[in-house]
Amino acid sequence: MTFGVAPARGHARAWQRMLSGRRLDLLDPSPLDIEIEDIAHGLARVARWNGQTIGPNIFSVAQHSVLVEFIAKRQAQLRGTDLDRRWRLAMLLHDAPEYVIGDMISPFKAVLGSDYKAVEARLLTAISLRFGLPAVWPAELVKLVKAADRASAFLEATRLAGFDVAEAKKFFGQPFPLEAAAERDHLASWSADEASGRFLARFRELCP
Image (cartoon, rainbow, N blue to C red; front, side, top):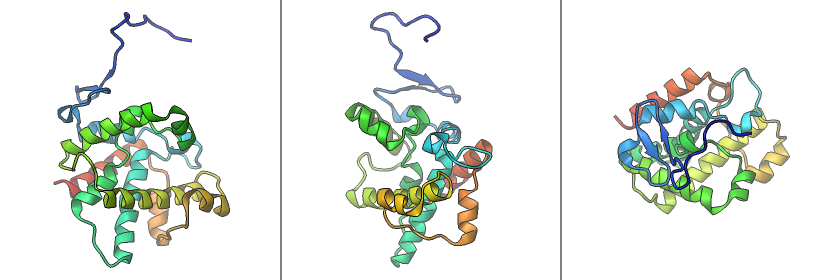
């Protein structure tokens, strides 16, 4: 059921008002309308796994983003390398468009197809330009993001979302082990305020 007055034909709203006061055009987003505080606030209130996780709070996209950046750093250390600061910033921001479009589970993204991906890509380009990242991410960076993202998804799936290990391996590949203390910290569901605060703190360390 739809409430309220429908927009006049030809005048459908394609923008969102942010708490910062910015008005972000979803079809043609400008980097000038991107604020990190809006991103942190939104991502801290978007649930991963459609909210189907254990714990007193949702497991938010903001918390997932912090976990992905943490895992990427650990993966680089095991390779005997150190990720460039800007690439670690990209890890933190890899899901930033979801502060506007939400976190749709992969099966639903497949149903929506190219339209969803086009909006997501335009938003990520605007976000990248706003914070000094390339408009088009290098293939090697994309590969590293996907590896850390899948490792994070495996941990979330098996620790929080009810997947067994065999099922998670099928969808997300081999697990990437974390130290017990790091796992407890990053997989205990944070409140929205903690998720937003820790996301912002990490951003400011990587983008001073």
